[in-house]
Image (cartoon, rainbow, N blue to C red):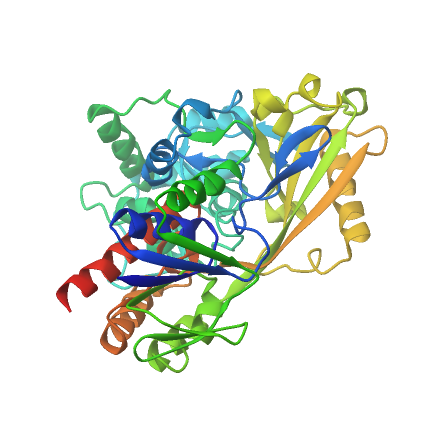
Length: 466
């Protein structure tokens, strides 16, 4: 049984491991000269600092289970700091107890100073207002939550937190695809109040045994790049994986037959396409044109991560927490920043060159201006934002820019229905070809891993039934 996996990011690697462990012979092609995709770690300020994702969620078990399976279980660490803050009104405010930005303690929110008295009064109306059912079809996050929470809570909490998941705007994002937990809460027939529905979710999780103090995130010591490296090593150790770097998948035709970018062709039994959505659409154009058209309509936005090293004495307002969310109402290029040296004990100043390391994210789907700047200008804009946020008293000791073009898919209302339709179209045209990646059902490493394993399982099932 020969299977091609296109894409050497965490999705492709997770699919490849699943396939070889099931006995398949796998060829994995990756156009880049390295594996790992957007999961990359490099030396910065004397430490191994991530250039993209710096952790994965552990409450969604796919990534955690995979890390343990490939031998990283004993090397996983959790954030030393879990408190997050919000930069609003040129001050740093503690993020109150919430579910995806929906406050579950109105008085705790009041104590943060994040919203005005009018904003608090508007939120309290949710607790007593009659039910306002949503339509059966999918709607935007703003349409679903705004009438219950009010504009201040949406702008200062929900949009910066939820919008940061895939660099999008809640005014355009699908409630069902981006925040399924809030979709369930908003449609909870037992609770007219959204705040009460979210409280009930938290109470139900605790009653089921969830530990509210359990770590939310984990990362391998030495950086997230260790995860794809370990997955690749585990797959290669079976003797059934061949990796071809610098080679991509150009097109697929019935068979399936794969044409590669180096001019060679492969006749295989099955294929997992784990490339970015826009690339997958190009690959499937001849084999499954209906699926390709739907997939090609998924918008993607570009982001950048800027790593900044600061002498501790240069920071007039240090962050007492893991990082800071930046609402778009602040008018800044930075959308969020991670106080990496406080968040992770292994990135503390004394573990490197003595500096504090901050990682700043830039880029939203409705604001690509800063991402379009050259590296020097982008770094300058980020430093200006950090100067205002942290009261910097001198220039950084080191700055580094990492760009991720067309990296984050945008889930607009109806996204999940469109994904189901394109997968049905693909299954009809080529039952032993499956898709994996963030453009389908979730952004982040756990969603990528789980989706890739499901794609590999679909290919195996189709081959078993053929």
